Image 1 (cartoon, rainbow, N blue to C red):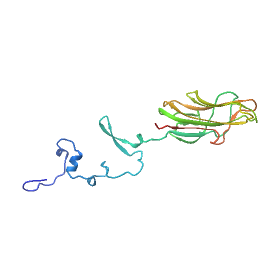
Image 2: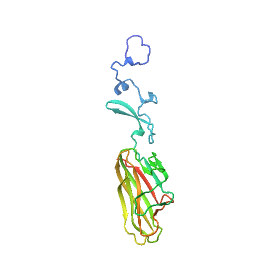
Image 3: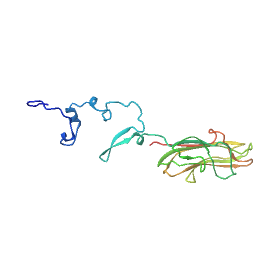
Image 4: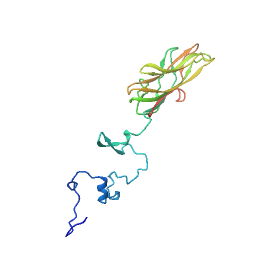
Length: 222
């Protein structure tokens, strides 16, 4: 800065020194202020993050013209909620009657969206799309006792989608799988049902490990 006579006493810059109330990038550059002179809590781009942001890391966004900060957790992509559960013991069912499979043991349940103790149902808690799947092992306890067999995903208490095996020849045990993407609201709920029709024996769903009879879901990122 040029001056006439004695050099003025140095003084800190105050808000009143900015007459138009706006500090632009050009004004900072004219003043010789570099990133190295800024405090660490100033958003300057001087330091690279170099890792996936933590949920509480913040970004600046314009909300209809108002500048706001926002946590990364609001914008990150994640396939959650997600759960997988299995039937821990064999469940006896009634011949030719659609029966809810009481999937009672969770491998994991991120978001606590699956009820494994009372209703045995999945409630997403968000509006969107979810891949929902299930499998079961149906048993007649007779070497040739199975007739028609079904595995179905129910939505809000009604049959939404199902698979069917018709008259498996000389069959005692029959495995089923179903899986599909379903659109839903936040309070819709889903359950796994089976229908076992037999010609002899006692119908049941085999349960002793998650690889035999299981139920699960995960969010679809659009």
